[in-house]
Length: 529
Image (cartoon, rainbow, N blue to C red; front, side, top):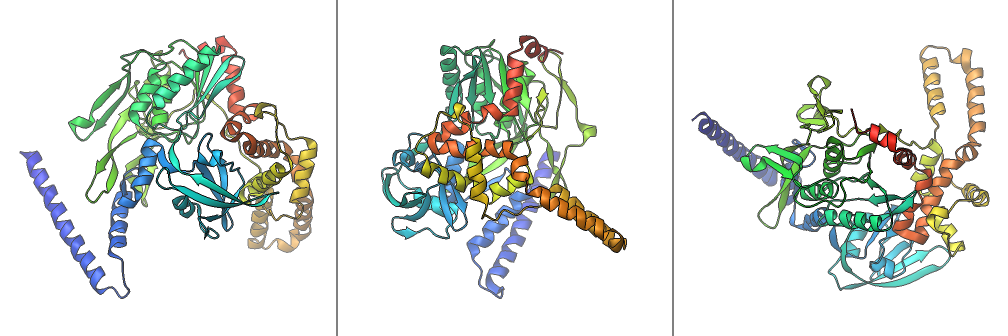
């Protein structure tokens, strides 16, 4: 009886506030001094309402249906390439192997001048995307500008593009197989299964599953992926929500491929949702060693609801719990300060145990078994990336060099680096170093305390010394700059494959993975209490 009474009161509040909203909407639409757009008003109201809940509960208009479909399925009709904006133009970033952009011979660095005769100057990436997408089988004419070749015309026929969940797998070294998983759309589990089977057939005796920068996707695909490495019947995740149908236990349903092969999972701060289910479940079951940095911390489950007029919404309906019983949600959206969710309080966090009795904590995402310090770039490197100067140099490099050795053999030579420094000679890439920022703070403090006159000579001398030393930054930071140059250049020859393979020799995560997997005793010790 109490529940019915509560529901009645609840529905009264809903009805009352809908009436109030309708009156406000009518008054604004009728009497506001400037002309308003009713559709935009409603959309702003809907978005504002949902934003007060959490970032994952979203409304999708009919026009946004295609974007949402791509999020869920990884499928769209277009040319199959990523793009980026530099100043007033959009450039080809990286064509996807085997798709129309690749078949048409587009290269990273190609500037898009026109689509079907329409000038693209001043249009952003989202606007260009609308021109490039279209019904499969239809054609478009792309006018591009390529460094060293001038203006070119490319005729391209759109296709249905299905982005791969596993864009790369291979044996890297020492019989270590590597699987890169970038999304959880349909068939993700099958792609991981096929990749593992293929690697084992090639002689792989140890496996690395890379979930770094994977923001998640379909829950059932996460279960399927864990199932590749663990037996049938294992509980992988439990969901708990408001309604009985949201309370579910998800278990593995199929026979695994290999339950014994040594396995390392790579994660970082951008590994979220389904990535955390996979890494967390494998950790809780002591089936894998997790390496990297703390994951994002998203323990919320969304359900898609179809609405009227071909609209839809994605709404949070449950929380998920890993095999140990822990909830990895990092932010408490029911507890906000100044409109922002706060982190789960340390006092409320609980310690759980993996199957072997190792301690794991809830409320913090997935904590790696082995932490690797995050790579941070110098202010110089950040400035060169932000100004797109490394991207532009790679374009020039490609225009003068027809081919490159395979990615794992490719290195920037000292001659190449000298050419890069010459390229930068007339470029603007001003930046403020950390030391200069501290000096600025010191100057401000001296002014506040009336010590400027006393310290002026010393401060000016330090500033001059810093300015002189800054001239050497290109030499001081040449190793990290060479790494980034290698990455940007090699993808102009080997596209997606190149982007992956070029990173192994300089990746601290990979160095730690090798250290663990090449020492059986260390690997085993990390999986026991």
